[in-house]
Image 1 (cartoon, protein in one colour):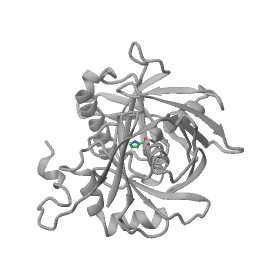
Image 2 (spheres, helix red, strand yellow):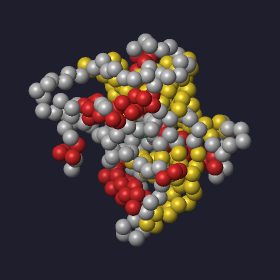
Image 3 (tube, helix red, strand yellow):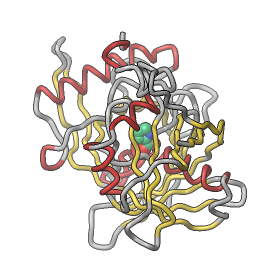
Image 4 (cartoon, helix red, strand yellow):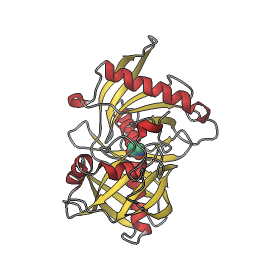
Length: 315
Ligand code: PYC
């Protein structure tokens, strides 16, 4: 199996570019990975080859012939519904392989088709699937009695978004922000606070004005499923934020929103309205860089050939 590593705003994407047979279609490939081939995920993401922040991307033949590829993303815990930093990463990877040229390219995911645009300067824009704010000003009580207020929004994953609550958003506080957001996620779970149709909210996103020297509208910290945080501003998280801004009339169609991540990398966001609908189409622009090309070797005698089970090493 051959992989190409890239990062988008500091957040890694590990793309399988050859050597794995997958079914046709992103939905079928997700089923295959979840039910028959979880070893692919653990081999590429778990130590000793990987680490918790990597998002894997399994390319597959698309069901829809207008798409250049299908893709399923996965992380240290499971498959993801979607991933936009990862989408930017695979577009750069396909350009690196000379499989695509600058222009528009449609990509099939298990939850719908996204349209990407690779510019001559290698900035990459993704038009997301329809997104929306599901609930506003939802209260969740933490074990210490503190009440946190946030919005629930669908950006291609389910997010609980909070503003100006909890530890200050700066890199020195990454451990405290991780603990805080994990506590919120656990509390949402125990209080049965969910997305639409009982969907689990597995991403928590904190916002505040940017730290000095960061030229953006806002800075965030995003806890991903598992315990890793997003080094990028999180494309689906920025989409969820755009849906909330649109719903509250704080951003209008076409207006730009610059979202900085905890490490100061920036995505440009905007949205298109959908006629007769409260949903919006988020548009996210960022850049990715290829960092390596690797052949994965799976030795039959290696006791950790499919990665060290995470429960054995997580502190
Ligand atoms: O960029 O959408 C994203 C994302 C999801 C999880 C990590 N990054």
